[in-house]
Length: 531
Image (tube, rainbow, N blue to C red; front, side):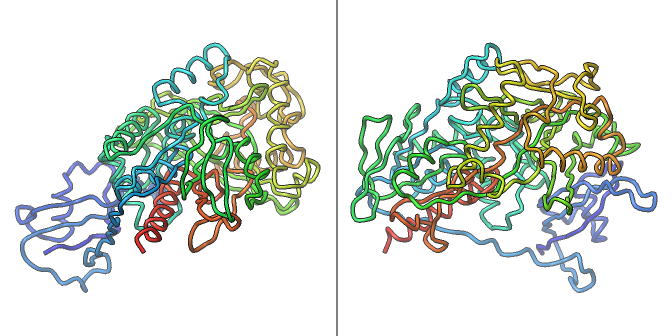
């Protein structure tokens, strides 16, 4: 018999293997079990009524004999898996994928598996040369504007924590995770509640997915920026690369990423339908990882079975009509220099798979929308100008050499900028200068963030201690504009054959949702081609 067990709580210090745990729950001899598969594993650290930390499992089990499922609400039949088949299509003209981040990568993979031999253009370098460029920037401050933390093989997520969590509820999530495992990711991402690959593993995974696409006949051009498009009769007909080469096509999958500002400018100039959209801006905050572990796990914080702890915080500013929240929290990571343009400072967070740096960092963000951009043109690209303005202010505050402006929470709250003795030294790689972050944040954002810090300090004691360091600025949280597409066929509402996909197009947020978006666009295109 095959069944699923849900909500199976196991004490943190229970050392039985998973077969023994399932057998004890079902009151069946463990020798009768043929297989136990972990579908989901989560940590319950709520510690209600003095109870200790537990792991909560969903298990699929196969055993000899039968059991009455009606006896327990946590027992059920294993749900049927939804599979999809890619139509095999004779290639005539090759589809083009712009950008080799998660959306472009998975769109290209689907097209390649269907036999269409896609052509991919990535403005940045392959993962090895890109990593070298990033490391050189961190050492010397010499920025490659086309190959950096934002641009290059794997997309912006390659230099992040590699989180694979998403609020998206879609059957394709399992497919994406399985593809990552087949490409070398740790198998635990298939069942952990909060899976992550880590930037170190993700770099190898990306290479292996690229290899499959190439082996299926696809072709990838690195250091190749799409600088223009050709149209005929409202349909896309070609792309222009690096202002020189022209490639014919009938379909372009635009997975350009949320920092592709000159691509947005080009699309807007060519009349591609777009709109400005809301995003969020703020700072990075850093604590000792042990502090976060203690706050989340209590007396069990040193238990080796527990991972580096994370957190998620929200705050609703009713007075100003804004929301504040933590974002891209990186346990055991570092703050990185994430700009893609000279004379600007941008922060982000990054962790290796082991999350063992000893430092926890997270963005603390406040929402901004089109009303905030009205003084920056009030048009489709006003959010881009807004970002650039505050990134330039951060660059100037940091000393005009890519060092970042840093301030203690106490000074930020009290209008000073003189604390030098931080709880933990800021990890931003190009150095820092103590400065007043109020000078590189919108006034309304700074006011909401101050109230949020006070509120969060009540949720996690000493979270906003006076000597905790915050680093500015975090602005590349999501796309500042949206490339408008039809809800049904995923194509641009103004130009047939353009498939805007992923985070840069304004339809996803993170690795998983971007990958799913790329897959769906490819499926729609393949369905159209198969008719």
